[in-house]
Image (cartoon, rainbow, N blue to C red):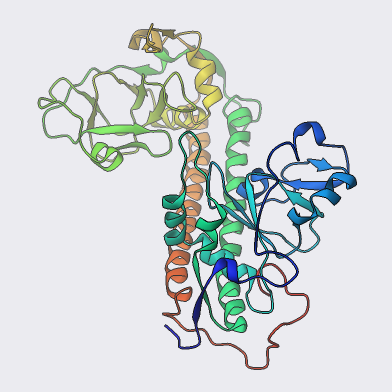
Length: 421
């Protein structure tokens, strides 16, 4: 730890004009009945959780604002969620609309001649402090933090120039993560377009004009009925990861002692799970991208596509919860305990419009594979940057790693933004 660093309670880091911590007004001070079309903004939990100060549009009248000025929000204030999902943070940027906080938030107003909001926000957002805040939260159906639980936190206070430098370094990682997240969103949008155009024949790839036909899946999928031999690993099916080793996915194996009756999955097979999962209340449909043969629960349906490319197309098409529902809803019967009643034969009776030309199937599949590979690379980069940032935070926010500060930098430059630059 650097000798210049000291620790102070969070509630001791304010200026003279406003209290460091201020909760939103409780009771009937701000209700939906008091909202108006225009006036002073009411900052709520949605803005903080989303990181967007314009996520919601609620306003109160100038008269109501005047009565609640103690809850006013200024640029550089830190907003933190205190109820429900506790500990989420947002630094109010320059140019944000004037307003107040709602009862679910706490406003942290720092003395900016001593502390950088970006540095304090980074410290409060570190995994160690987030876990501490969760432990300090209390409540039954809804967790809540109080001012003392937050204000008693000990905050490291290195020299202000060093705080700003640390915040600037961490912001560099945030910028990279934000750019990759935007790239990921664009990739997903492209895949959505592909499902509604390329996989339906509405748009054709250059050089392909073969026939598309509405066919029952039973015409392009075959249930081979192979069982386990005892040599295969047991796999489960995940919404986001597809077929995945059961121990890796669930932490342990739930397979029976004898797996001879389990369904064998060949590379490229289509697997249908008949269990409701999140956005997929009628089950999940995935292609096996595993290079070796594996086994799955006998409750799953396993089918081999007429061509590997058709399997790729079906896998990409059924990424969409809407596509899965549209296909399965006419086929499935729900049991008394919300169980899914559908036979493998019945599963194959639904119809889809599919390309019949193997060359066109292969070309479409290649596009799907390429975009999926791009998405996997983006996800890996995002995960790597998040991991790197966590490591940096651990080193920089404790003073274990020192940063070089330009001695010519003013101690309190005018116009400092919320990220300390």
